[in-house]
Image (cartoon, rainbow, N blue to C red; front, side, top):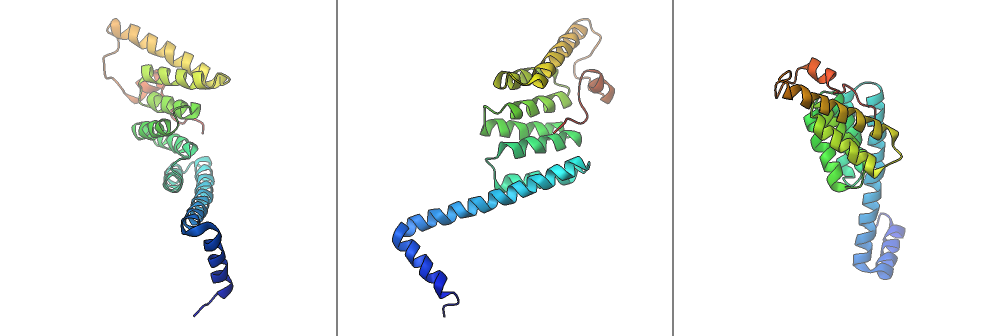
Length: 187
């Protein structure tokens, strides 16, 4: 029994015009478009959660959005912000590096990687990633500023280590704050 005979007729016409493979491709494109819309809605929900300070919920929304639209690098970048705010910089670093893998020319992905390194107290790596972000987007005054800050902090830390004032591997909360680790990066 045909519940929607007019729809069956439309499908037959499409099949005749596009062929079976064409119809399959059209349906796949429609599914991808629907997933992208859902992913962008989840991104907005994540942004709202981030603005409200609910970083766990923000991470959840961004992760769900990534599952629907894994090619959208901005979803990874937003997730990194929430992870760093949750003091999960190591996890944030992995997410930022996945964003860079997907788009090696993304200045924002490099910037997020730098923030994650900074949150881990890895100033040399943070400096290098801020430099990469600035190199990819030379108009970014913030990337340039952060590069210079991290470079100077890393240089000072190396000088103090050479003098024996900072032991290798020291990473107390106070040390991280003192040496430039951020608690809550801006989205």
